[in-house]
Amino acid sequence: MIFIIASYICIIHALFTITLPQDRHRAVKTCVSHLILVAIFYLPITLTFLLQSLIPTNLRIINLSLTSVLPPMLNPIIYVLKTEEFKEPAKKLIRRFSRRALGQVKST
Image (cartoon, rainbow, N blue to C red; front, side):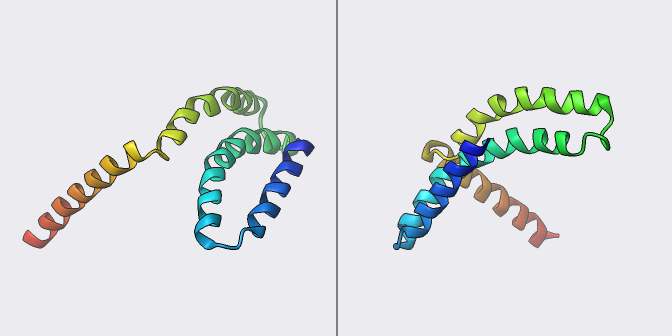
């Protein structure tokens, strides 16, 4: 875990050295999905061990079991959300539904 934290400190330092805002934005977009998955994996484990006396045993077992199932399950979903093949149809779908919802609100 120390190695992972040190790696992210180096990544954050590298992000601060990027001067152009659009380049920094692109670099952050690249890192965000990985950071989400790392957080989904490490936060429940860390909280379970830090708050061990406060969390019932059954809940600890469920929590630790989910950390082995949830990240691999969410991995494809998180990375698909970044692709242009998904973004464009999703934006069109959202616009269509928002127009219909606004049309229904205006007509009532």
